[in-house]
Image 1 (cartoon, rainbow, N blue to C red):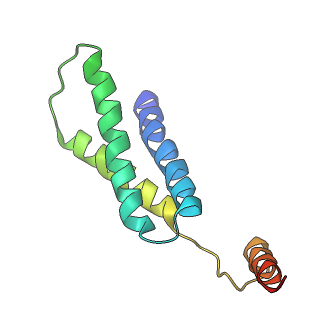
Image 2: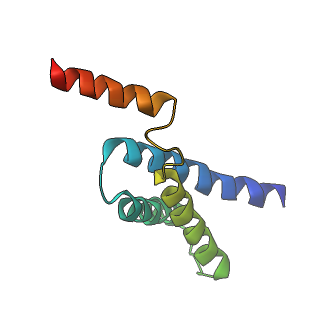
Amino acid sequence: EVIRAGLVLLYIIPCWIGGRVLRRCMHGRTLGCGAVFGVLLYALLIGLHMAEGETITFTQTHVINCMLCVLSSVVGTLRFRNRNSKGIYANRLQCLQYKAKH
């Protein structure tokens, strides 16, 4: 059970981090790109597993793990703070406005 939980975290954390990177790099369609990133990362992990020479029988667990990758990367692309609230986003907006004036 502990090993299985570690493997699930191995799927979730990189997908979430990849979603965060996509959100910062792209300005539109981040949800779709996050979903594609999750599928591609899961396919890469399955490909690495198959490269070891082991056969894979796809079960319900594989589908759930793929869904976890997709959902975690999509959640990584979401922005939970309002841009006009106090904090780092407001400072960036003020910085951009200052640069546009000067």
